[in-house]
Length: 254
Ligand SMILES: NC(=O)c1ccc[n+]([C@@H]2O[C@H](COP(=O)([O-])OP(=O)(O)OC[C@H]3O[C@@H](n4cnc5c(N)ncnc54)[C@H](O)[C@@H]3O)[C@@H](O)[C@H]2O)c1
Image (cartoon, rainbow, N blue to C red; front, side):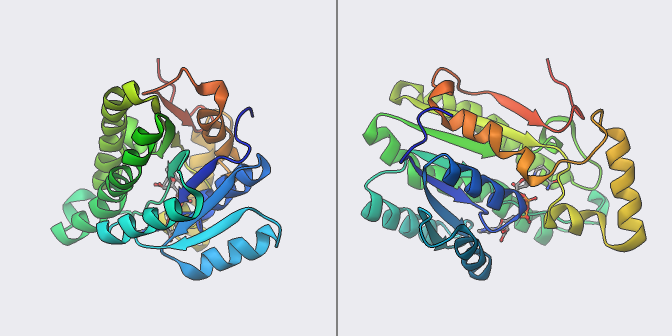
C-alpha cells in the first residue's frame, strides 16, 4: 500500500480480535502504531508479540472518558508531533432483544460505540486541521446498514457512526481530512464468541451464520485490515465519506 511508511496511526480497541490484526497490518506497512485499549494486559501481549524492534507504542485509556481521551491524544502529539491516521475500532455489545433491555445497558452501549469515537474525533481532528490533512477510518458494522436481531442499540450506534462519518467527511473536506467507514460482517473474534455463546449452541449459530454468507465462511480478523490500510493509504486520497462492507457478500449495497 502506498504512503503508509512512518505514518502515525492511532488504533483503538487494539487489544481485541480485529484491532490486533489492524495493528499488525499497519506495522507491516511501516507505520508508527499507537495501540490504544482499556485493557492493559491485552496491550502488553500485543507489544510483546510484535517484537522489540516494532514501531508500536501502547496507550491504555477508556474511550468513554473524554478527559482521558484528551490526555492520551496529547501524549501522542507530544511524542510524535502529529496524528496522520485515526482508526476508531473499539466496540462492545451484548446480544438481547430490545424489549429485554433497560436504559442502563443502552447508556453503556451508546457510550462505547457512539460517544467513544466522538471523543476521539474531538481530540484528534484539531491536530489534523492544523496539519491540513489526515485520514479517519471508523469501524462500524453491517448491523448499522441492515440491522441485526438482538443488537438494536448497537445497530443504532453503528448507523449513527455512518451518518456522523459522512457529516465529518463533508465538514472537514476543506482541511483535506478524509473520513471513511469499514463495516465488518460476522468476524470470528472474542466479541462474536461472546455474542453467539459457547459450546454446541454457539457452534450451531456459527454454522448458520457461515451458511448465510455467500462466500460460505465467517470473517477472520485478517480479512478486515486490508480495506482499512487502503483507506489510510495514498491510493485512497480522493475517497471520502464512503462506507464499505467486508462481510463475504452478506450484505451487498448499490
Ligand atoms: N466481530 C464481529 O463480528 C464484528 C462485526 C461487525 C463489527 N465489528 C466491530 O469491529 C470492532 C472490533 O471488534 P472485535 O470483534 O475485534 O471485538 P473485541 O471484543 O475482540 O475487541 C474490542 C476491543 O475494544 C476494547 N474496548 C472496548 N471498550 C473499550 C473502551 N471503552 N475503551 C477502550 N477500549 C475498549 C476491548 O478491550 C477490546 O480489546 C468493533 O467496533 C466491533 O463493533 C465486529
